[in-house]
Length: 106
Image 1: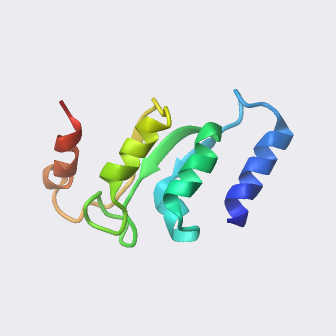
Image 2: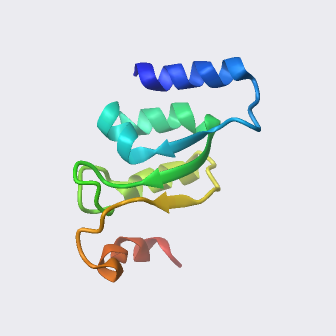
């Protein structure tokens, strides 16, 4: 979409790839543009941090429209080695809202 392409053009024009990067907010990216996996492929080379919440309600993975098991696997496949911030409103209590992550550990 236009927003993603504009961000890439601005970063390329600035020309400081080690000093100026994106915070990739996957909730807002999906809500504003859709096509989440294609946008991740486009924007990840310009990204220093990723944060997640599941649209439409901004809840934890498993409580919305995005398959974050797939998306987190895609990030790993594409070589992202940074942290993934959790910026969601828990639909349940905190321990229950983190149950989705147990399958990622180990």
